[in-house]
Image 1 (cartoon, rainbow, N blue to C red):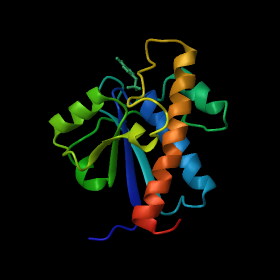
Image 2 (tube, rainbow, N blue to C red; image 1 turned 30 degrees about the vertical axis):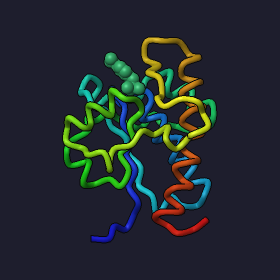
Image 3 (cartoon, helix red, strand yellow; image 1 turned 90 degrees about the horizontal axis):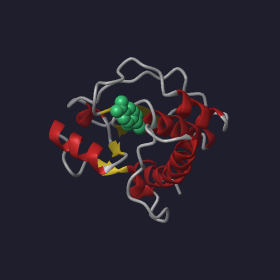
Length: 162
Ligand code: 4NP
């Protein structure tokens, strides 16, 4: 069944740091490109620790400094239904990817988000939860690079525009 929108899900462990930042950053990237009506964006965690909670204050601060408001997002846990609902299920690190595979996602559907930033020198977005603000700045920079690569891929594969 053809979908009306391309659907993207960002996944980390708690859904309060990396994946809500990715959701906010990618939403801005997509909105700036005039494509907000054709791409649906969501995020989830593989664990339930922070279900219903807003993003971590440090994640809100790192995005807020760039004019991106993620305060309205709330944590949710990824479910097996997400694999059927989303065209892209993008893991922040190998542990998240492993958790998604255990939940039932196959290799074709689950990808590493940083695969879309091949020049960034990393394969994983490091977990910033137990570190300081610098970790959130690094996370922001990595997510922003991958957001541009992902949008280019969606344009090419789904929207057929350069
Ligand atoms: P996230 O960061 O996966 O980027 O949202 C974490 C948030 C919470 C925990 C670990 C990582 N935690 O252990 O509660």
